[in-house]
Structure formats: C-alpha cells, structure tokens
Length: 130
Image (cartoon, rainbow, N blue to C red; front, top):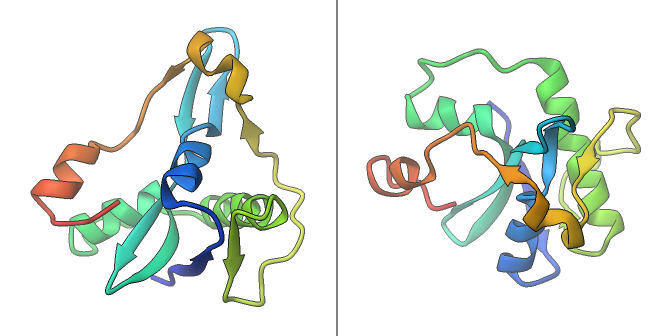
C-alpha cells in the first residue's frame, strides 16, 4: 500500500480541520463523511484515505480500497497543495477531474460530520497517530 507523503505548509491542526470538511456528502440530510486524514510516523506526514487506515489497523486484512478511493485522495491532495496547506513529495499528483465536496467553514455548524472510522480506537488501540 503506497502512502502519499506530504510536507505541511500550514499548522497541522489547520490541515486536519480542513480535511474534516472534505469528503462524501449527503446534501439532503446535511451529513458529511470525511475521506482523508493525516497519518504521522517517524516525524513524517502522509495523506491517507480512511480505507488505508483500515488496512494499517488490521494488518492488511482489509483490502476494499479502490482506484477511485486513491483518485479521491489524490484530488484532495491537489486541492490542499493549491490552497498552500501542503506540499507533495510525489510527482504523480496532477489536476484530477474527480469531484471533491468541500463544506464551507461557515456552514460547518449546519452539518453533521460523521467519520467512518473510530478515531479513538485508531489512536489508542492501534497506536496510529492521526
């Protein structure tokens, strides 16, 4: 599983908050499912799709990640780079035509943000710092 190494150009909390507002949306119910997270290991940062976190937490036992998931991660990385929040080590990230929903900050309180992973479990049980 290839992780996307990034360099933070902004405060980590700012990038995390921004990622919290990017993902798959249900506009009728105003629910957002964030797609990506920052994964930190040995003082290096990676942008990972939540399914990649599943794979890490379950020692590869989960393998339901698709090319579309990786394309979405790469599209999000491209947006973050354009906004000056990160720089990307990998040169294969180019403009993508994948649709990425970004919840405007001023609308955040009107929506329910639901994570498809249990962040507490990942942090404590599996020792994954996100």
